[in-house]
Length: 458
Image 1: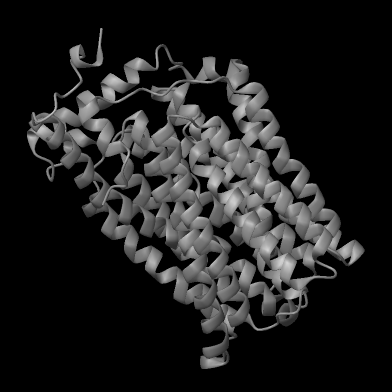
Image 2: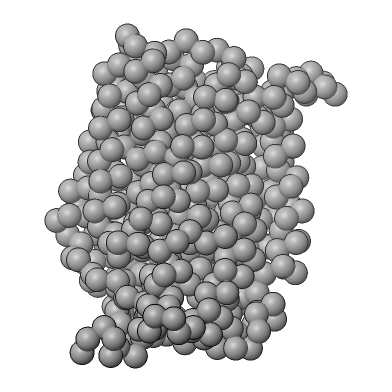
C-alpha cells in the first residue's frame, strides 16, 4: 500500500478536523497537567535535597561528621523502598489526586519538623519518615501520565515533568543560600532551620489544592470536550495495541528477568544522580567556594542546563522513535564527567566545575527516556506495581551512594575515590541497556498526529 493509500495519511490541501481536535486535546492536557505536576515536583525535590545545602552550616552547628550526614541523606530512600509499591497500587485503586494530596501534606509537615533536629537519631528518623511520605509520588506521576499520553508522546511528557527537578535546583540553591544568610538568627533560629520551615509550608498548602485541581483520568476530565476525551482514549488504546502483548500480572512480572534488568539499570543511574544531588554543593566547596549563596547559584546554573537536557532528550527520543541509545549515551556522558571530576578536583577548579555541569546534564537527561522503556513491556497492574518496584529498589542507590561518599570522604579526606566508583556504576547503566534491553519500535502515530508530536507543545 502506498503512502497515499494509507487510511492515516492526509492528502495535500485537505484538512483533518479529527486530527486537529486530537492535537488540541493533547495541547490542552499538556498545559493543564504538566506545569502543575512540575510545580509539585519542584516542591518535593526542594524538600528532599535541601539537606545538601543546609549541611554547609548544619554539620558544624550540630558537630556531626560527614558519615552522619551521608547516612541521614541516604536513609530517606529506605522509606521509599518499603512504601513505594503499596503507594502506587493504592493510586491505581483510589486515584491520583487523593494519593498525591496525602503524599504532599505528609512530606511538607515532615520537612518542617526537620527544624527541631538536634541528634543523629532524630535526623535519621525524620529523613526516613520523609521518604515514607514521599514514596509513590514520582512513580505515581509516571503511571498517571501514561493514562493521558500515548506511547509516542510519553518521553517528551516525562521530560517536561522530570525537568522540574532540575529547575528545583535552579530555584532551590539560591533560595536556600538566601534563607541561610538572611534569616540566620531571626527568632533565635539558625539559618538552616529556617530553610526547612520556609520550604516545607508550600508543600502542605499545595496538597489541598491538588484534590480540587486534578482529574484522575481523561474520561473524568470535564475540561475536555466529550469528543476530545473520546479521541484521546482511542488514540492511547490504538498505540498501546501496536506494542503487542504486554505483561499485566505483577506476580508474573517478578518471575521475569526483564524487570530486574530495569532495576539494575536505574540503580546505576540513581547512584550518579544521588551523588550529584547530595554532594554537588560539597564538590563546589572543595574547589574553593565557601559562600552558600555562590554555591547555590553555581548549582542553579548546572541544573538549568540539566533541565534543558531532559526536555531536549525526551523530545529527540519521541521524534526518532528510539529510547535505548538516548538513555545509554546520556548515562555515558554522566559517567565520563564523574570520572573527570575525580581526576581534576584536587588541581583544577575550572575543569571540575565544567565536569560537574556535564555530569548533571548527562545523568538527568537519561532519566525521562529510561522510563519509556518499562512501559513498552508492562501494562495494567504490572505497570503500576512494576514502575514503583523499579523506582523503589533502584533508589536504594540513593541510600548507598551518599553513605559511601560520606564514609570515603571521612576516612580518606578526599572525594576522588568515591566519585570514581560513581562513574563506574553509571557506565554500567549504558552497558546493561545496550546488552539486555531489546529494540522496540515505538508506535507510529497517524500523519496528522505525528506532525504535532515532532514539534514541542505549548
